Image (cartoon, rainbow, N blue to C red):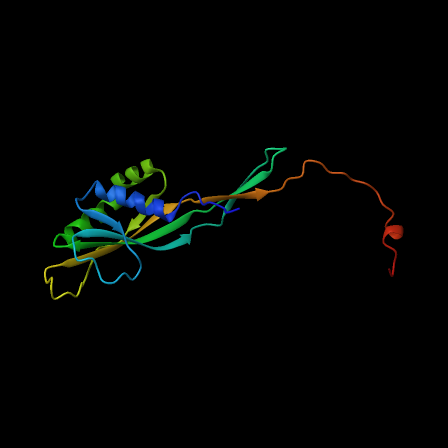
Amino acid sequence: MRIQISITESQLVEDLVIFFKTLVDGEVIRGLPDQLPAPMRECIVITPMAALGLSLPLMTYADPSPEAGARTITQATQWSARVDSYGEQAQDLALTLAMALRSQHGCDFLKDLGHAQPLYSGEITHLSVGSADHPRFERWSFDTALQFNPSITVPQQFADQLHVGLIEVDTTYPTGA
């Protein structure tokens, strides 16, 4: 039996894609860490970076006797991603996205999607692309973090009856035996 997590990385990336497409025209895609070469077209690339636990897991139990029970484990988690903007308008696009994620608009939009909330968005920085073929092609980047609360459900046994009896300890467990 494979345990399923309630909120996946793909859902978090998709939420950012949906949000960003309401703010800018153009392609918004998921990136891969250390992807080389950089895409030489105007686009936004979201690259997942880390998932850090913000608390100890919280456990809740369900005992639907006589059926098998379950334990649900939930942990507040900080999910980080790098957002890269490519093209001649890269700075404007990156600044637009970072500002929107920092705003009440970003919180409300992501809340309606139901998976995560923004924690912060860093400052945008210029990064070189290193292409002599495209001297005006730019890359601007910022880091962002969302909080989400994924959970998993695992089987849990419960006892609903207890039978207590007396035994003669010396007879049952003799000394030196």
